[in-house]
Amino acid sequence: MNPTIKDVAQKANVSIATVSRVLNNLTGYSDKTKQKVNQAIKELGYQPNAIARGLINKRTQTIGVMFPKVSSAFSSDLLHGIDEFAHDSNYSVVVCNTDNDGKRTMKYLQLLREKQVDGIIFSSEVLSKEYYEVLKNMKIPVVLVSSQTDFAKVPYVKVDDYQAVYDAIQFLISKGHRKIAMISGTKGDPLAGTPRVQGYRKALEASGIAFDSSRLVYGDFSFESGSRAMEAILRKAGEATAVFAACDEMAIGALSAALKHGLNVPEDISIMGYDDLKPAQMVTPPLTTVRQPLYEMGKIASEKLIRMIETGEIAANKIIAHSIVERQTVRTLT
Image 1 (tube, rainbow, N blue to C red):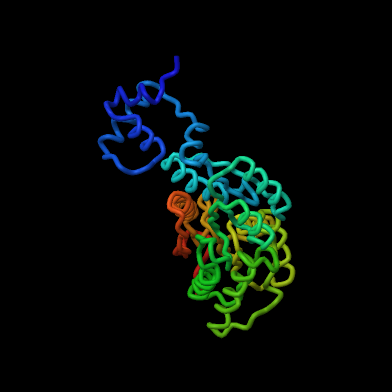
Image 2: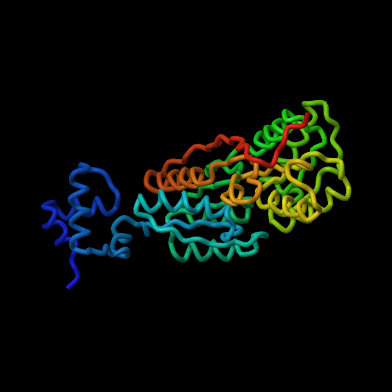
């Protein structure tokens, strides 16, 4: 016969109400009591009934997470942070792959509604009015990560993309580079496209360097598009001494294209990325890049969402500090 909550209470020498409070992550007990209850649960092999708990606290202890590309290293790092905090808070995570153009977003919003998730983390996609109306009707909290919105009740966690790219270009300029090309993400993308291009142009302007449209090429944040964009830069702006790519995957694609053309990095051309994904450390030579702390961003977004679920209070927006990680793909011009 399976152990019950009553068995746990008896073994831990506490009331059933106290066990329930521990299981539902509520307050009103000491750390020592929590340890006793958890030890009793472990020794008895007790499995809480999620449906019964949901009836008590009106929650499923589940959050939904929506990514446009679940398989990417970028999404993986964010998800690691999200899941870590959710797990520690006794929440489960349902992950949805909305696809790059968001064509599955409405489908997955309906799925998450049917699963009665307690809240949603919405990542790397514009929160359109259409999506917002659906979420508002679901009456659950939403937090954006690596995204931004003007909707008052939807907090976000992200880096300042404009400032991060401005600092990256200033870094290249400080190394003596003045002919700097950029591989941007999707043209017109208001999240990671336009602000990063604006940072690039403003940094050039601040150093008295004229903007050259032949040195700005657009990709789609993929390795393949980075390789294609680098080919275009070598054709149209072959005199460029440095290339900044708006994500590490495109930067690694650019590195691959440069090597195919017999160019040595950084001796013949310098390449810099954005994100500081694990592959940036693994390529040869290791990639100099702008770091946005994705694991920490995911963890903060998860923390904000769960706090909103449990308190009903709207969390504040959070701009996360970026940094430049110098490795071996940028050289100093003499």
